[in-house]
Amino acid sequence: MTEHAHMNCEKLLGSLSEYIDGELDPELCQEIEKHLAGCDNCRVVLNTTRRTIDLVHAPTERPDLPDDVRERLFKRLNLDDYLNPK
Ligand SMILES: [Zn+2]
Image 1 (cartoon, helix red, strand yellow):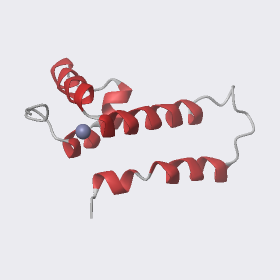
Image 2 (tube, protein in one colour):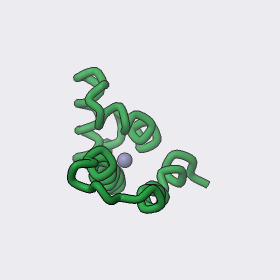
Image 3 (tube, helix red, strand yellow):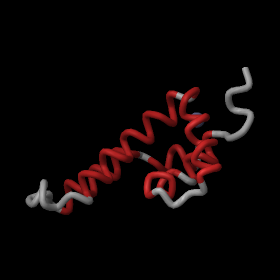
Image 4 (cartoon, helix red, strand yellow):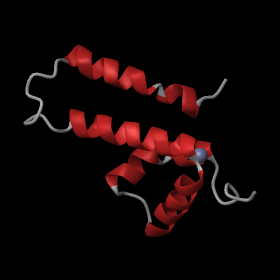
């Protein structure tokens, strides 16, 4: 079991937004994709985050998305729990 040898979940999630924005080095992206291939937890977080970012960044598709809905979406992600495990 050496799937997580190169990168742990905490490191991946710390770079997640940059990864989604395409701001990471290709090498680091590869490390992330390698980790994602073997880690359901991080895949779920990535998919949820991507979907939420798409939603928030697509005002033409969602012209009526009120601020409180947006806020609730971010809260549902609970990213703090992943980044700062108790
Ligand atoms: Zn992971």
